[in-house]
Image (cartoon, rainbow, N blue to C red; front, side, top):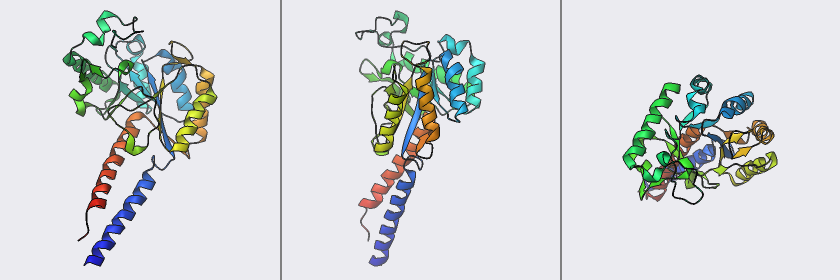
Length: 276
């Protein structure tokens, strides 16, 4: 009986190792997520056509307050229908105004004057707006300005079941088991060349990690901007290397990470169990 137990134990271990190897970023060496913040017109006019031509999908963090959302709802609905992720970036995009360099934050959108309830209510209302675009209920979130707390309270903790994951602004390259889905890091893009963007992807490939790009302007419309040429070179590189790079919306990647982490936890439990 002991021999059978040991055989079963090591068979299970072997199966788990094989599953983990197969699961490595959906069978690819790394994962790349392209995220675009603030519902800009250039996302509809420049980015989505470029991604569609390469058969790649991006994640667009929308705020209902921005004119690029309000004035082009039909265009966002069309983008959602073709597989791009419509994601939550709050209703009014509040940021903490008391931080040095945040003089541009208006009093009415100063998160520092928000209550936690007001923040939660506005985020949930944005989810309702997004559902009118794509009919979906599963969603990801991006912290406006990277601000995660009101006072000492992590406001997203009040709505853990509302989102699969949240994107932050910390630069990081992490493996599957290291990622905290409540605040996934991203690399903010501002002025990099195409070669510099591609170098970031190559680093993710070498380290077998997740790389999340955080774009604002692409060819203009925002002070944080990257040229159309640089973005085009990145998209072309991703398209040409899809055999090694998994490019997918943030929601899809987050769901994969969550499932993989849960499977890894089960594997550890089996490994620590003593065969009888």
